[in-house]
Length: 334
Image 1: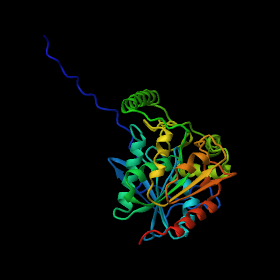
Image 2: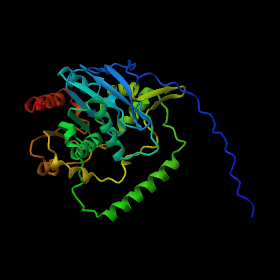
Image 3: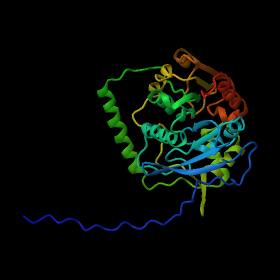
Image 4: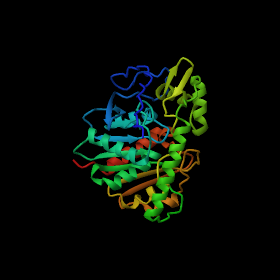
């Protein structure tokens, strides 16, 4: 029998060296928008070898609100909303989720990985004191899990249209969840192979804004053009969104919307929930009757007519006032 010969390793083709800036960019976007203000500070945060882009508005010595954005968004979507909270006396900290904005792309993505990332941000921002956690959409759903898993990390929880519900709560056995996990991972790996060499389609600033408006139909086009300067990068052939092209809607791992809603009754800190009642592509379709029976003991809940999924972008001043008055009524413990 011939001895097995190990193949000679072939060196990988060298990748072009792209020098990373010392901190995530927070300079002018090239387009102004009324009330929008770029962060006061930014930095990189290592999460198991993957760098997250972290941003701050407000006095660095003020009490902390951590803001978690939704899927296919980035921290810059808080550029109008966060300054209003900062002007109200808070240190607002947000970050680009993995695969979004300026943060690193990952090999795989999951709901659990996003949960661990928020914990890492809390460890860095306020390792010994609980903070206010505010989440929008997917960020709100992940925040429900965090408040349930590590309640000592939070003083308050604010959820902006991140109350997922499908009106049916199946009680799955462990072996069924294992099957779901296998199916999710297999499907994700197949998808990952199919898009391994894909790039996001380039376009002008206006074209990228118009494409995003298909998912955000209630958004002002001028706002979306502003966002292009924050969440996209300009190449020789045009602008491209800084969103990992392998990401797909609903690609959160073995997860169902009703599992997050099941966390809501057990929240042990003051809770503020805001629901936009105008149906949108990116929304959950949750109704007030899905939420109200499950509110925790200390809770305020507002279901808003004439507002869509992006409540903090459509009505930033009124939503900021809701949040600030809620925190005034339930003061942060000294």
